[in-house]
Image (cartoon, rainbow, N blue to C red; front, side):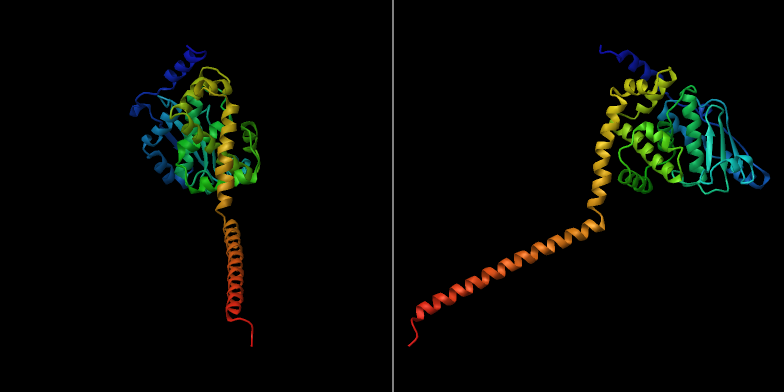
Length: 300
């Protein structure tokens, strides 16, 4: 048995959530001012099964106590203290979510329901990890995967993040979430791409195994190594090697500038070949004229 195999098996057992019963799914308790009571009722009426995929992703068998959601207006202290581009946040350890209903949800969430899914995922991640520290990039990336499908907006932002920045380590990625709005957007795109890359490179249970390692008290890098069989550094290097090509060079090769450059080069090549053919034709004509004069003999 190779070293670490026993712990890997243990992580797999802890990660397996089994069948999730209706009573084990998240329950929402939504509080709102009178002006938003109808919206609160709509959110409370959402089917708990919408969170089942997120629970399977992170390896959580029981959601636990109800999750409290507060719908907050712009006049509330929470809204005044938060940057204008923040549409909501979660206190994972407390099982408490704050949503600013008067703010349009920004990337990576396109609606209030999608924002709620994202923040509920954060609470579930905290519970699955037994409140152990979870790196910000991994936490946000998993919440993105749990909350919505990867689409054109994600691909566009990932392309921009790769083209406009050099390779970014996960440590630097975590710091980007504390930056201005543009940096946060890039951080979300990269975090979501990294977690999706983990799922493609390893298997669908890898996130659950990593979180199981955290729940057992392992540092993140150790939990990652036992869950994947490789180091976090190796994963980072492979991620950037693949994405630097696909998201930096392929879009460039398909851009309008490159297209017109290619058309211009083809035109120049065609022009050069045409001139060569014209020169060959003129040379052949001259040769034919010389042969004709020779056959005709000297003039009388």
